[in-house]
Image 1 (cartoon, rainbow, N blue to C red):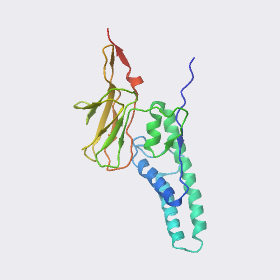
Image 2: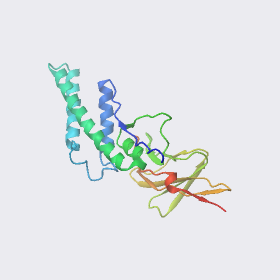
Image 3: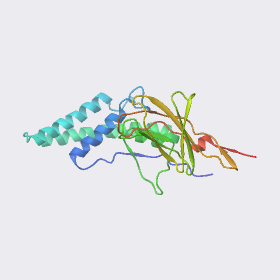
Image 4: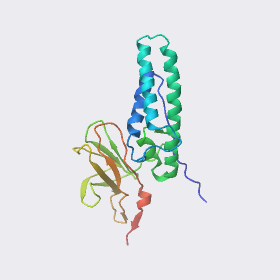
Amino acid sequence: MGATAQIPKAVLKMPSKIGDQIIRVTDIKGKMTNNTYFPTGWTAGTVTQTQFNNDLQAFEDAETAVKARTPGAVGLRDAAYITLKQDLDAVKAMVQAKANANPTIAITIIESCGFFVAAKRGGQKRINAAYNTQIPGTVIITADGGGHTQWEMSKDMVTITNLPSTDGSKTTVSGLTVGDVLYFRSKKVDTKKKTYNWSPWFPLKIGSGGRNLGGGGSHSTAGTLPTA
């Protein structure tokens, strides 16, 4: 019997500088708001999203007071950070539970929430996914296989737009409308000896910047069709 695949682990990677910490947590806040994998809100038993947002604001306000040299502000800021870190630990546990329940798209879930995936020897396997970039309307699409790759996108998974094929498993698409929800898929280019199936469709809401992920799948899920 083969070894069970290890589910990727979410990590925070909190910076040491306070200004960078605020940027880091604000990024998580943005990606956890209306997140694809938590459409009905956060899991019961964790910190609420409202409380998380309030605790982040309290930390920012306390840091502003420190910069203004308000007496006692350093102690208040340090206490606010402890509270915020507890919130982050609770959110990370919630995200990890969702990843554990969906192992085939665990990396996608973790990164869509603003967390990092713990590195393991050999690096992480590239997955079928779509990412917003810092350029509005421009996205990056990746496939889990290597080599010559075909790409498609659609608004409804019925009417399909063919995208240029690439020599590798990554491509960039620009000129998309911010706010649209698009579906993407990929497959290896067929050879004389083998025909490949398309990957599952994976969605992405086109953003105005920042790195957000859509859903994902795998070519192993799609499988291959041997030719005669």
